[in-house]
Amino acid sequence: MQACIDLIVLHSISLPPGEYGGQQVQQLFTNQLDWQAHPYFQQIAGIRVSSHFYIRRDGQLWQFVSCDERAWHAGTSSYRGRVNCNDDSVGIELEGLEGESFESTQYVSLAALCRAIMMHYPINHIAGHEHIAPGRKFDPGPGFDWLLLRNSLNLDARYFP
Image 1 (cartoon, rainbow, N blue to C red):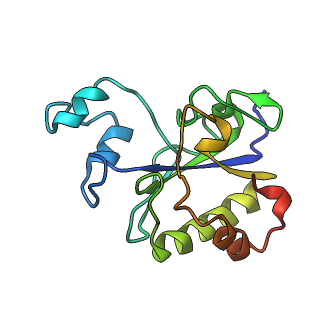
Image 2 (cartoon, rainbow, N blue to C red):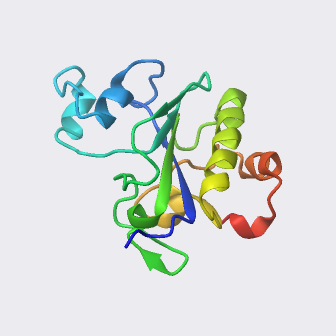
């Protein structure tokens, strides 16, 4: 039985942290990252993660996993009374650092993507990694403009943390 996809989880990522524009995030999500290419990569060596989508700083959108398949973006998580958010969510990574701001082009792409996802799945919740794994994860962080996303999607507050 397939889970009911009703949650979008927003994340932030950059590899190495604070560096933008390279191919390292895409390489990580396709299990092709050279663990020797940067000292930071030794800290995450061997990690196997995936996300459904990735939005670069310039708004460019990448898809890695079908929304009908489970991606490994949430880790140990709980939200809306359910655990294992990987089972029934779509994960979207934004190129950036937790706590820092994101680009207007990213919000435009994110809103369009969320609208498209909501046309195909009964999405009732949009949350950050920080909301589904509090104390363990902190992204996208205080630099993310939740009100801008909410207004862009014309959704009421019940959808958001």
